[in-house]
Length: 262
Image (cartoon, rainbow, N blue to C red; front, side):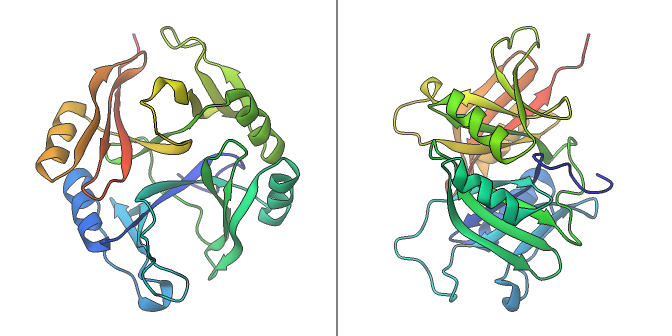
């Protein structure tokens, strides 16, 4: 990536975990990331890199005062959507029926952030870039390639996000994936929406990252050897082969190897 992300585009992801070093080690071995626990005055936040470019953040689950939460929050990946004015976007969030969970807050000179809940119950972050645009490399092995909202109310989600950000929704025209809803920015697909009813009972609305990999089956096997779990075994779909996995601390993510176009 060269330059800022267009508003509405997923631009960053990070993971909150009880054992930060264990998570850094797991994703280093799985995807080849490099990272270390950051300075205490930055909450120890680790910016993981690949080929010298930032790809994701990993942080320890803690309260703002540095204490450990009790009970611990679930281990989840958070997707951040780009905005060029976070204050204006948050006003639109509230007007559209969403809830502001955290922020807005300055992150040094890197940018401004907030975390919201949409009206369907899914949590997502917002990022207004300062000196840090977000992921510096995408769509390569071990990096972010897609972000997907899973919710029980697809029409409500589509209306909400189009009201708060310049995100359009459209039905996919990809053969074999007709009916899948895509988020688009300036006519380019940047994410999707999936129906929660397609998943097992008990799963809440959520955003999930997809990582591009060269071989889904190899990554699935490596994740299991490292203590991870398989939530949905490797399978072929319209645009590629994918699997849904969880790291040893429960953080769920998908991996995908796109098919070459005919």
